[in-house]
Amino acid sequence: MRITRSISAALFPVVAAFAAFTAPTEAKAYDIDCKLILCMAGGFPATCGDAYDHMIDRLRDGKSPVGTCTMSDGEEYSNYNIDYSFANRTSSDAWICPEGKNKHFSRNVDGDNRTEVKVFCYDERRRIGYGGGFNSDSSYYYTGVSTPEYKNFRVQITVEPGTEAEYTNGVQRYRTDHGYGFGSTRVSFRP
Image 1 (tube, helix red, strand yellow):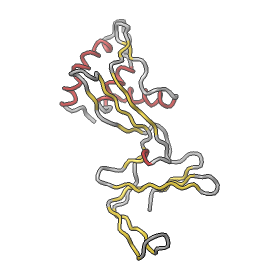
Image 2 (cartoon, rainbow, N blue to C red):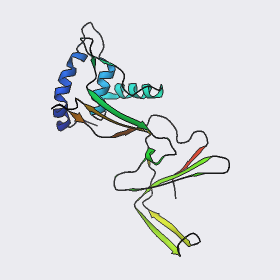
Image 3 (cartoon, one colour):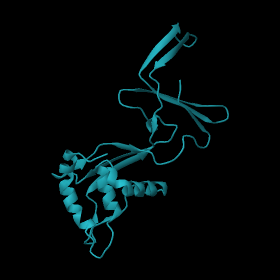
Image 4 (cartoon, one colour):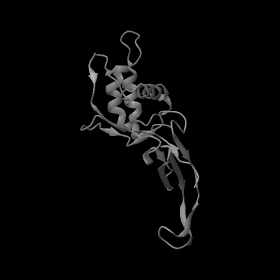
């Protein structure tokens, strides 16, 4: 993923402000949390792998996504707003279908207190059979069925809010853990 020219232009004043962070005063490395703020706002372009990994490590340790961003003069940079939340596997919010696809999501708890989640993406739903109501002999046929992406972390960051340099990349979603099932949750992807 590359930062487009419009994003680059919008972030230029912010990048200029952060230039002092990356210019080492004593052969000191840049502040990774400062880089994380910029990379998150830019949608994590290819050069931001270390910042993305840092964010994931912080989240897995139960911390907020961004730590303290310290400028070269020792001051903390805090002119950004961050809004984030998590969704677990049993929540519809954790499953993302491609644009233009619909999402089917159902969640049931069986007699053993196990949660079963059925989720899939589809193009169109067609009714098959006759009748209506609870005792009908009808079911649905789905076309273009595909597996959704699991992304349990939602974040939106705005840098330099209220200024001419204000920039946000909108709501972004990421996956912060491994595997499709854990505990007593079973996930199926087909109708």
